[in-house]
Length: 88
Image 1 (cartoon, rainbow, N blue to C red):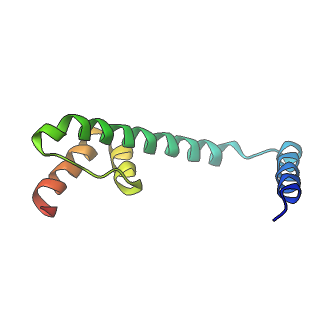
Image 2 (image 1 turned 90 degrees about the vertical axis):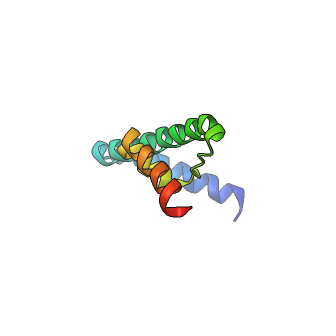
């Protein structure tokens, strides 16, 4: 695709959103979910950084980040238990 066409389409979409407006509730839900997934990835990063000396390693991907982000510390503990006892 030509760069001019892509820029034109993006500009038209931005103009459409500015004119029509966006529904705030779905965007807020998507934003909060994305933030929770990022926090879950951060939980797993620290778990892998500090748990490396004890042989604990949980891969960081979308599924594990979503589980640890939505469930919090109990979700991280569940992932560690699954990794240690079920997978290995």
